[in-house]
Length: 185
Image (cartoon, rainbow, N blue to C red; front, side, top):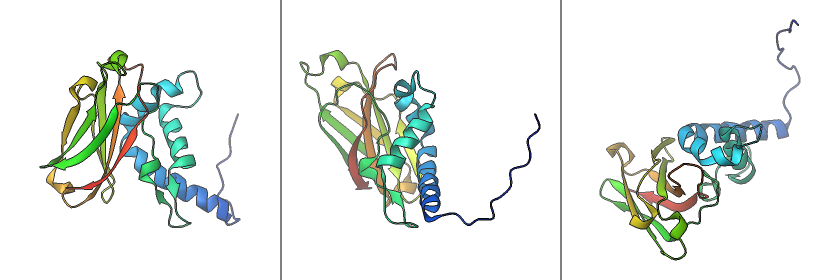
């Protein structure tokens, strides 16, 4: 079978096509800064499906985490989901600036969270202005109730978005990610 070279359309794109292209561009830039993190985060959700974990993550963001009017389409950070699963999230999760890092804390209830007590924190900080993400994919245990991610001086004064998830030791179970807000160091 011989394929012909794909020809560029001579018809200008419709507004709907332009909106979709812009949204996809924004999502690709965002997710590509954290590929390994979302691969781990959506691996379970992608199991048995024809889509990859990365494609599922991007699809979720396209449907749920964009806002604005074309051409000013942006990520709505509070609606982003970076991991998807069944592990129950702990109570009162928080992220606060501490020195040259971000301290994540949460409350652990040994009765409610007993089955997941050995799960490890997955933390992600996304620097809005630079488009870079900083992660700890296997951090503190759920029962330890705290994790600190140290950041470079380059993020000082930048808007940072904090996300927290938990993953089991065998990496087969994971929680949905939770957005803990925007911070500035």
